[in-house]
Image 1 (cartoon, helix red, strand yellow):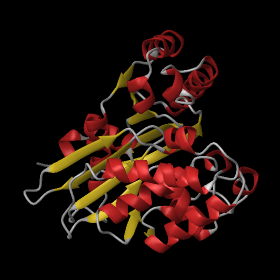
Image 2 (cartoon, rainbow, N blue to C red):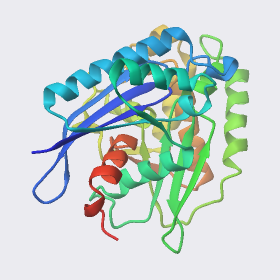
Image 3 (cartoon, rainbow, N blue to C red):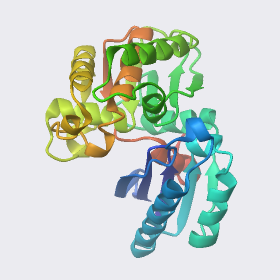
Length: 309
């Protein structure tokens, strides 16, 4: 059976999805991996990808391509998001990956990133019959998509992400209240530029922030998508975890059950984006999806004939 692969080269993480098409046209996951490389570390200040994170990220991509060869993948697509959209030296990174790995990276816009992420959620049978609002919190940017009264998907992308806000505002350990409030004010300010949504939409969150928050809620000893996908987070869950993260130094956050240690420094900023997104759109709960951009890429490129009208 033919296998396809998608790489999502993000600001905090690089993800690999290998999938095949079942006899009834569905996408069947074979491999789904995530590695934290912090490609966008320091980008807001220098506007360039630094040599350390560039090398680390290329090493990860090379390792992922080895897995693709082992699995017999025949078609691969790679998409770069916020960090590569903004970095002045992105061409250097893209060319180095092409020379070393033979892989072409497509740097996609925030609008396209949001649309593809929305597609990934909309194709999930659990939500396929509902109007959706999808929130994708990344390291460098956040995307919101929702269906308006006519059924058209409206797309918004803003340069606020868990890594970017942490570097810009949360410099103390533990975080000081004045730092947190300055960050929260910035989040609210940008959210105010996004129009409100209808009351009948179903909010669904994707990305490492929301899956980590749900993992903490469950107290999972290790990341388990089968216990996270289709989970439900209440506003009170998010608020409680924000207070917990604010109260602890980084070394103690790293041992919170369910929280990936590599995400411990940026989780407070990500949770704050999520909380104020819900408040802005009048929702008190949000569903959790382990699917995201990488799924949307495969659906769009290789499963298009199965998407329907």
